[in-house]
Length: 196
Image 1 (tube, helix red, strand yellow):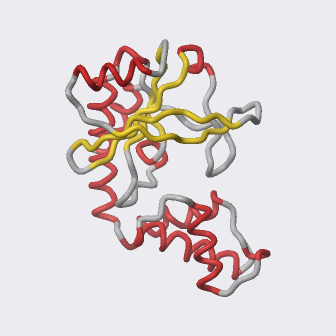
Image 2: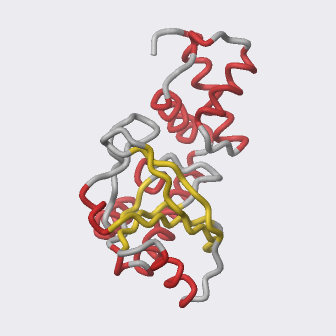
C-alpha cells in the first residue's frame, strides 16, 4: 500500500478489530472510513487490513497473542479429535494466526448429512447454538452452511459441516479471495510442536 490514507484506514480498521473485537472486516473498514472522514477511494482490501491486524498483534499484543494462538490451536486439536470421524480441517485464526481476543476456533467437517454433527454433540452432552455462515464456492456461488457453535474453556468453537465430497475443494477466503488453507490434525499438531 503506497497511498498514505489507504494505509491509515487499514491501520484504523485493524485497531478496531483488535481492540473492539470486530469480526467483520467490512464493518471495521466502514467504521474506520467514518472515523477518519475518508471517501470511498481510500478503502483498503481485506488482505491489507489482515496484514495490519497481524502487525498490530505482533507489536502491541505480542505475548498475549502468542498465548491466545497456542490456546486456539490446542482447543482446535481437541475439537478435531472429537470429530475425527468427519475428516476435520482447521481454518481461520488457527491457521492464519490472526488470533484476536474474539477469534473462534473454526473447524470444517465432512459429514454424510448436516444433522450428524448435531447428534454427535448431543451424544457428548455438549450444548451448542445453531447459526449460519456464508461461504463462497470456487465456482462463484454463495453457500449458506449451518454451524454448531459452543464454548470450550475460554474459546468459542464453530463446527461447520460440509458434504462428504466437499473435502476436495475449499471455500474462498474473505481475506484474499483464494481457497482457504485447511489444516489436517497432523498439520495442526506439527504447528503446535514448532511453536513449543
